[in-house]
Image (cartoon, rainbow, N blue to C red):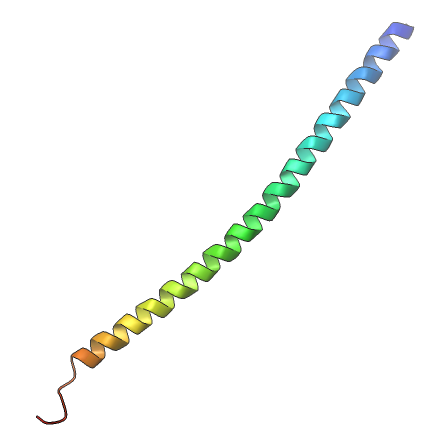
Length: 68
């Protein structure tokens, strides 16, 4: 009986350690995901800015010069 309790305590200790490691990894992944989402948002904003700039430049290129 005493040996069974010791085995259960060892298993419990092992599982607690594993759970702690998994929790730490999930925390790190959540931080990385948040950082990547922020970077994607910045890139989307930059793409929109470049598209608008391109459209503006195309419109300017299609205008008739003032001397016509």
